[in-house]
Picture 1 (cartoon, rainbow, N blue to C red):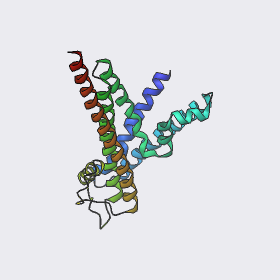
Picture 2: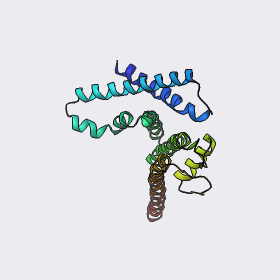
Picture 3: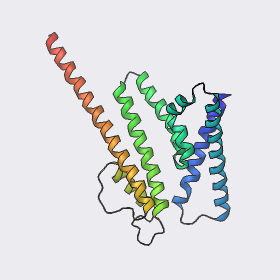
Picture 4: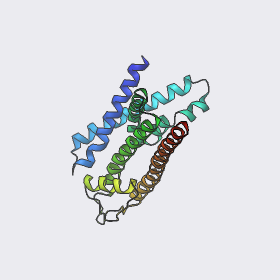
Amino acid sequence: MSKVWNSLLTFLAFAFLIAYSYPAFVIEVSISSQKVLETILWVSWMAFVADLVFNLVKAPDRILYLKKHPLEILAVVLPFLRPLRLLRFVSFGALVFEKVNLGKSVSISFKVISTALFLTYLGGIEITLAERGNPDATIQNVGDGFWWAITTLTTVGYGDIYPTTTQGRFIAVGLMISGICVLGVISATVAAWFVRITNYETDRIKGD
């Protein structure tokens, strides 16, 4: 039963992602389409609330449960983060890399890069919805939004496209912090990989 419920939540996360993203790809959403999108958003939100409440009540230590499940809490408190549930597929992919003996560094890098791509996508959608329609905005379509998200997350920041609204600037701060963390993890992983190679070569030379 739990597998069916988890599959349903994953499906709702996909459905939410589509409904959430759709308005960024079109210039104007019809009233009928808007009602369908709102229904999908509300149904998925209520399902995630029900899942959190049920697991919280069932948990022997509720404080510990809340500490170990920040993703579920964020999905309820911050609705636009609900698609992050799909990042569980990232963990599965990293596990596959480990099983085929590609090493933990590869699996960690896979997780980090996949998460970065996902955050870039969400950031591009959010900034497009926040900025588009503002007379002074430099981000007028989803292409601009994705370009801005990529340059921001990678900390390149060309400055050709930037947020002009208060909401857009808050999104930018979040994406900047995420970018610094992502690059830090990647740099540390690459450095650790080179250290292991150096140590291996040193041990091999000593063995000879």
